[in-house]
Length: 299
Image (tube, rainbow, N blue to C red; front, side, top):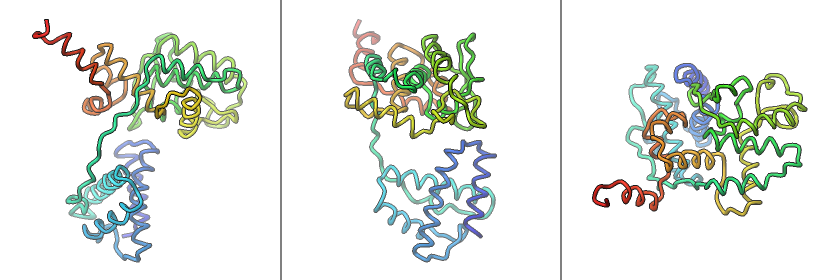
């Protein structure tokens, strides 16, 4: 069977059957294309139906020379999903990834910013710059609502329910959820809308997008990372800071204030509570405080 046709059909499956976002679909498909490219380079005449476990092992051996273990694990997971799809469509009866283990990864918890550090970050925004108010509203929205970067850049004007104090967020799997938004965050968003965005002419299909660049287009994921990276350098916080850091800080702060993990799960848009448990960082000092405060032997 033709690899390109299989990959295209797989994309349709991920979109329609699994309801994944375009960004997630691109990641899955990219892994399959890497395998296809490998077969072409080494002139291995195998289709997606005839490729064997040994062929996959050789591919992983080659790819491990140029990518880190985390990327290698992601590629293995992506390929396993592709061959599961072929089994589902009855093109294959086995998955050549079944006996191939992913490399063991050490879990590194992301940096967390305190509320004071968030304020320091924001204080280094140049509000005299045409995009200064926008950048402040962006940080306040990610930190105030715990959004993913993809959720932020796709946020629409029609998703803001100011009177009710909620925003509607399009999360993973194209599923909507309602997230409370604080009046302080709304204040900064409204200030940006009235004093900056009103002077920008949105291009077609971007008329309802909240955060725009100066040319009237929605911001890219990369642009949000660049904004935060530059602010981190100016702030001298000496931490790896990105959109995920702000989202993580949002969740960690709520947990330390005693918010139920299930509520945090809903706010973050996690399907599984296990994801939230892994995601939320608890430092040793906090754990020690919890035991000392609540364990009956310490009373």
